[in-house]
Length: 193
Image (cartoon, rainbow, N blue to C red; front, top):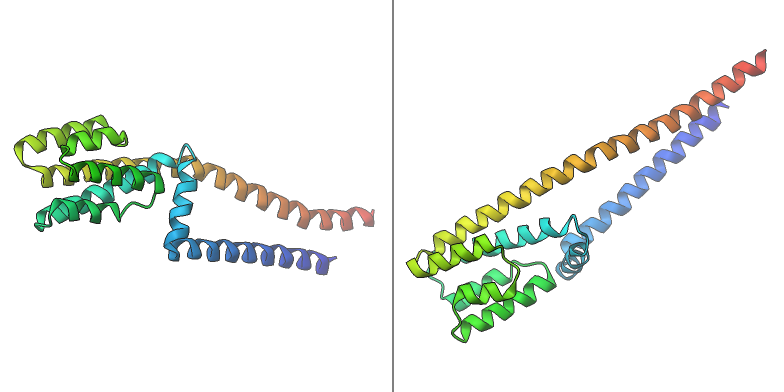
């Protein structure tokens, strides 16, 4: 009976290792393949609890790139194009390309960003004020930091929500293995009496 228990544990460990390997390979393929990564982000945007994290992450990258490009003296058209390339979402990419086209046609930055409907009112008001004062680069950096703080806070919240359930799954797994192990011993013990 000990051999059965050892075989059972070995099979369980092998299945866990294989599952982790398959998941790891899938994650690596998603990260390495840019198109697959964008598809994954598009799918993940449909999930209510992941959408704000991905959007804020993308907006943070977008505004950081825009700020750096403006500081480096890159023309606005090129700055917008570079910033759009940091976006991993089809939906957001499409809306930002539309805003870029509007800006190229002479529309104010604030108006173009407002029409997209993807940025917060706070970000739009900051951009509006900066457009009037000429401090766009610093404002873009501040907005990027705000979005970064938001997505990091949401990740912390998500981890705090997922962590207890992961502990619960681990406890259930340990309980099942323990019951399997000790059931054999109790079976043997009660067969003696």
